[in-house]
Image (tube, rainbow, N blue to C red; front, side, top):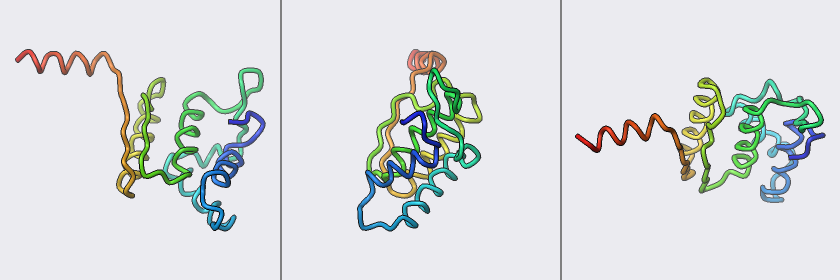
Length: 128
């Protein structure tokens, strides 16, 4: 992600790079708007991404924008490694809801979660 671009500019740039060139700008804008709506990042669409040196969006918002970059391409297969790590429960729920919507549209979504609590639950169930 380029730290000087806004969230919407970033997604439009990636849509231009990853979607078929036959799509019009209006169609790409509609796809970007849909993805931002699904991931609930519309309210930060005009916020600058930022960097370590330049203040921008939060870490959780940055993670959702990274997922949005992949979703803009309308993938048939999406692998995510710990997509909710470091996120609060509301943001995690939003991300998982978006992934569920993507899978209902026909994409194969695969993700990995590493959680000590989850491992303890699995270990306890396997002992019985």
